[in-house]
Length: 90
Image 1 (spheres, rainbow, N blue to C red):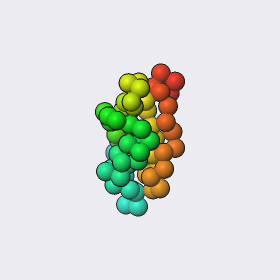
Image 2: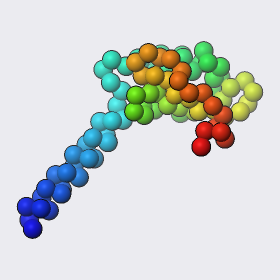
Image 3: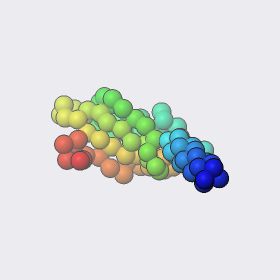
Image 4: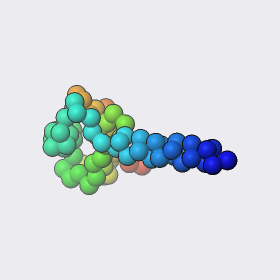
């Protein structure tokens, strides 16, 4: 029983570590400043949130129309891969 519990704890620790590491930009990613610039070029006047999610910089912000949008920017290329009003995103 002790061996099984130890294995479960080790497995849980790997899952937690994996989740933490998954939330970091890769070494070959564009810097966050370049991601913000890409969002601004896509029309964002205010960016309220930006974070790492899988292979993308993902964030929220407002455009000139005053509406709130969500965006995804490819972490390696800097291309905007999603850009939608927040109400339509969910």
